[in-house]
Length: 92
Image (cartoon, rainbow, N blue to C red; front, side, top):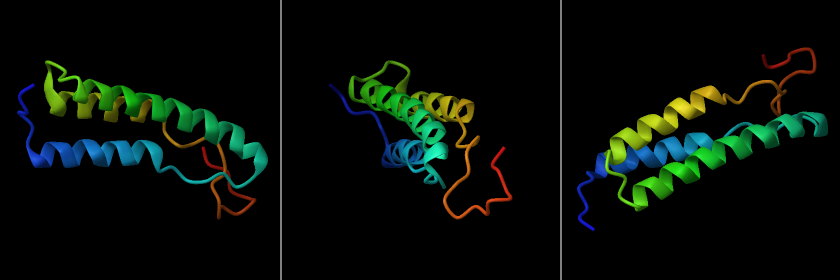
C-alpha cells in the first residue's frame, strides 16, 4: 500500500480522534449515563475513521478527517453536567 498522506494530515486526524475521546467527565453518576452513551458514539466514529485510514480509503485521509469532525458535531458533549460545573448550571 502506497502512503500518500502528509504529516499534517495525520496530525489533523489524530487531533480529531483526541477530540472524539477527550470529553469532560460527568459530574454525577446520573450524568454518567449520558456521558457514556455520547462517548461510545464518538469512539465508534473515531474507530471507523482510523480503520478507514489504515485500510487506505480511496477518498483519502483529509476526507476521512472531515467526515469524523462532521459526525462529532452530531454528537456534542452536551446534555449532562460536567465535572466542576456548579449544581445550579446544567449543560444544554
